[in-house]
Length: 414
Image (cartoon, rainbow, N blue to C red; front, side, top):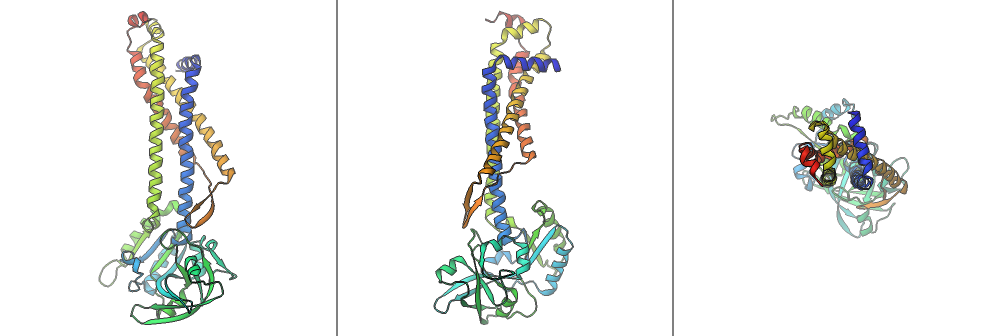
């Protein structure tokens, strides 16, 4: 085998121009794929981070049926205190759960005493909310110390603040209707302005959960949402399965499940963008396969055609068809390996250069996000393996043709 490897390497050196051109094409293909995977992966991870760490969390728990009517922010599907206690006890027992935040989501009328508009609100406990969605604080412009929200205060969405000419320190009035149909109003002080974020929930304001209970005349602790943050997003599917299975056994008096659990993927349309990025990555890899297959096949076909006399000579000297087949397959293997390894090396250098360049871009309302492309060894090794495998497959037909040549016919070839 070592002898065949030496002969194959020598044959590639004999045709330097063809070898360099083919290897360069393979190198370019590998470079393009790995750069695309690293950049698109960086954008995808950043997008997911902005969505989950700014407003959604990684998982959410509701009363069954709440999500189907979430657009109307219903107050008749609330988790009671006992139900919330069961849910939090389960979350406290899972080591992969880093934090969670109970919420009441409600709609209200927002007035600056001269104009009125509608507003969507998240009623939260500030400390728990910031532990669950840590990027939220970066979106809030606030004068408060030690947190972004206190009782009696409201954080207003940027669009409403601009439209209603509301500034930090101003007083406003919220008017809300509770689940019994009665109306209540309450004065709040504007403690901050929250920057907009593309997607559902990106225009919500924030008040303290205790203030929401007063505004809605809720007795006891009732909520309609628990947002959950995991210590590692890779544990999402496993944790979801654990929670879903455990909560499926928690039934109400009618014998029906009380809870429903949803991952962030079910809560935002941006998951479809993430799937599109994965699909584009797959298409790019298919293009790489096509490039390598065509280029290697073309080179090996030409190699067989130009070396017919040589093939006839070594065959007449007693070289078996199996060794001739192996020789040409080895040449394809070396071409693919050389191009793939060089391409991977150039890709790592290029990715490091992109990181050093600190390229910025905007995502929705978020400005100046820094592109931070990274590539994992599993991606690198998988691309190299694909290229090498396709190089060998592309060499198969020409190698088979060479091994089946009749020595006498081959020696007569001019």
